[in-house]
Image 1: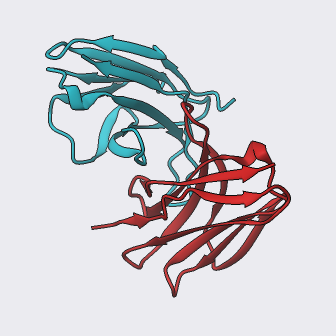
Image 2: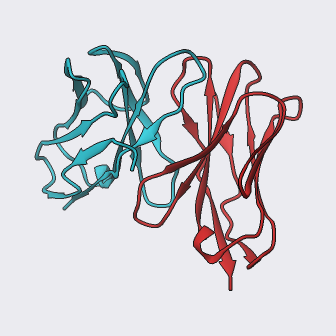
Length: 114
Length: 110
């Protein structure tokens, strides 16, 4: 158990809909990162939040957005869902202290877009 | 462009043998390295991290780092069927987010 929890665990949405995924970070951690993992691929970085502000973003379109709350929990929002958005969405919690930062993942949310 | 490369496998080893998983990366500079294990349908689980050249041992696992050759490896001694999983190598350059390889699928045959 990493202390990082994500909800929901599974979700089925229709193309064009919007979805919100949630993550509660490990106690004492101030940074949350979101990753998308397609089948057979490694996780791809979407964005990172540190102290409620986005401080890094991967190569994802603006319809992927997020929030971090004062308790360091986080949301990932995806608008106008496309079939290719079907993937495992992972939240990683860490304590930012330079490069020596271990990140721990939640159990993930499996999103299927039909 | 920072990239991390892994052989996708599958790598098959008999039970009790040593499994050797390799990872290469682009772009020299200040880095830290992480190995994650991912069972099918589950999320990645951190096994080990290494920051300095040389070997780091933790139980049956040994991480080996060679920055001059830009590779990092994970050795699993006395491999067990329960070690069968995909092993993800991840690299962090300074304060950048983790960059993952595609993972190597390991199969330990009883």
